Image (cartoon, rainbow, N blue to C red; front, side):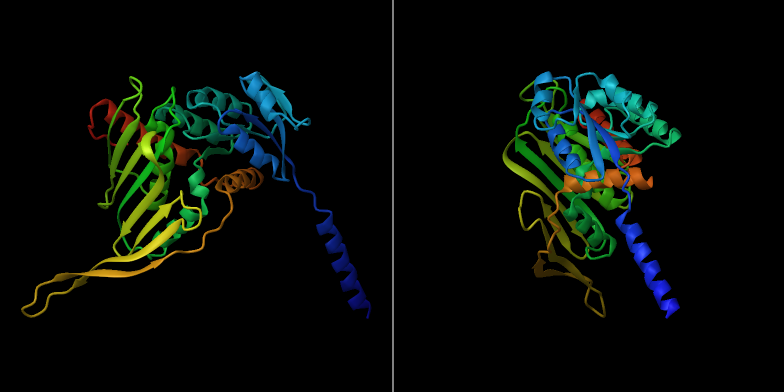
Amino acid sequence: MGTESESRRRLKDDHRLVQRKVFVMIKLAIVGAGYWGPNLIRNFMSIDECEVKLICDSDPEQLTKVGEGKAEVELTTDSSKVVNSDADAVVVATSAETHYALVKEILGAGKDVFVEKPLTLSVSEGEELVELADSRDRILMVGHILLYHPAVKMLKSYITDGTLGKVYYLYSARLNLGRVRRDENALWAFAPHDVSIILHLLESMPDSVQASGECYLRDGIFDVVFMSMHFADKSMAQVHVSWLDPHKTRKITVVGSKKMAVFDDVQSMEKIRIYDKGFDYTPAYASYPESLTLRIGDIHIPKIDGREPLGLECEHFLECIKTRKKPVSDGENGLRVLRVLEAAQKSLDQKGKPFKP
């Protein structure tokens, strides 16, 4: 009986320890409260394991707007306060041309960083930030949000488990009427999403990148871009991006040797469709040559996790801070995307000449 009583006492003590478990509260600062910043603020403030201590933006009016109802959060237009704050990590959602200098200063101060895409606007700057993060043992995560989309994770699993067979080619379209940028073209504004997905799905870098486009609304700023990538295993991918289009399109198609898949992010319910379509080989024998037989099978629409990708992305950043594990979209991942974008920009500038990223 004494042994049983002792066991019960230990179980109760263990239960009390679980109840008294202390969660490490991660202190965050967020820089950039403009177009995308409020979404990041909303998501991080909804997570119990972190505390948004400071929000910084160069626009006092926007700062006041996002600060409504957040009396516990310090608001500032001075980015040096972020660098010198007691925040454990900083979320950067400013314009792309500011990323390099800002992230460099924050990493230098010994803080982990989440920076919105693209990492920087040049490969050399991106390489410097990745090296700095590694040397300081800091987390550097890039906001390639679609890598956290449940539909993209499912699409990846269909490739990994062989459901689609060998991937022959992919093509994507990210189109809309607006929002026209003054500080970046459609390639840099839209294509990071599609490039990040394609590199993630194929797990390789292209051998060559080629791009063509035109500037219609403003001189020197491409409104529409068509980009092609060719890979060593004969896979290829095409990306079409534009903010001058009558359709709102967010779609990627993957054509494999066994099946084909479409991820349509505009659809609210049926985001992924798997098509059992293709061609089957009939081997040659006797006097009959090899032939191809058309196959048209079922369409499968799987159930997708309905959680918000941005929320999952924010949770992943906090998890990486706590566990010190490498983010899915770490600095190296962001750098690979940057290499492709830079090669595409060179191709645009030289009338479609192919470049190796």
